[in-house]
Length: 254
Image (tube, rainbow, N blue to C red; front, side):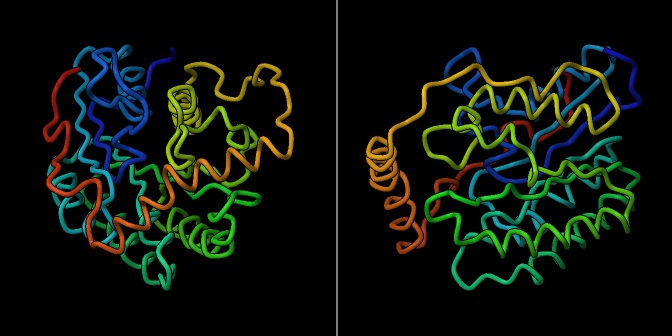
């Protein structure tokens, strides 16, 4: 891997950045694309240090209040910010308002001297339930690209990627990347930062097509096992992240 300028990296966000559905070697702690990217960066910088402040289920206002000031105080060379999805997918949410909070976060991080990398949302066309949010996600993405332009941030644009349209890129819950999806995302972020670390878009191996009836059964099983429980938690006012704290709250060596 080629030399890079980053010696400190802080990851900020929700479950996507915490690394859900990508268990590490111990089978207990989640790894995820951010940990994988940190490992790539550390391989070329012995003094490299990394923190991951992301906590599952966190919304934009919580991330802005709880994680962003901590990350800004660390004054890291690189900060990743992926946030707002847990707001956007809720009924009645306002992508314009969420984007204003997102820009405040980017403003604080860049003022601290960090280079910020952000992510757009993926295209949910053809996805059960989530497909209905496509217009709202597109609106939010437009704001994010403009924010990146204004603040000199790097954009990892997930919206057009064919790589993510394969079911093997996603875990059974269809909300979080699979381990292979996380691996490819780490390589993608490195690529967008101008670091050659490997190919993120190599073709998926051939897979037999799923018959329409089998696809319908799979969709119903997903709704029963994941979507309905998710709705139930929202109705009860609880989240899977209640009581949890960051897995790597301080900058430290890997």
